[in-house]
Figure 1 (tube, rainbow, N blue to C red):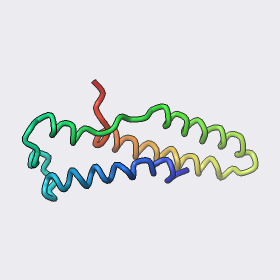
Figure 2 (cartoon, one colour):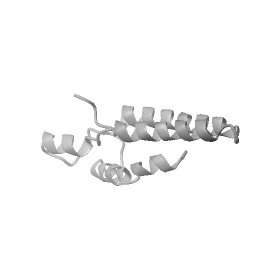
Figure 3 (tube, rainbow, N blue to C red):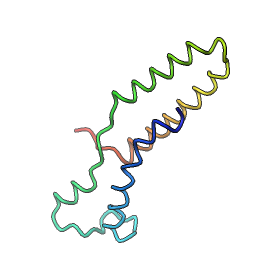
Length: 102
């Protein structure tokens, strides 16, 4: 559960590679091959953050942890690691990758 929820981000690496190709391998977002502003905005606009899926994942982890933690107390530590990975991944992706809300 630490790594599996983040696998959904792998198809977005193709988009990142296309953006890198558009910038000729540099990190400068202003160097682009797009001539029209609408094309530029459409290419660099990220996907929307799927809050429903993330909430379902968090609730599943909480349920499994509270159900089985009496027999396996190590689940508290494992769920802490999962929530830590969720926090830092979502923080980075919300600030750098996902579409800004209107």
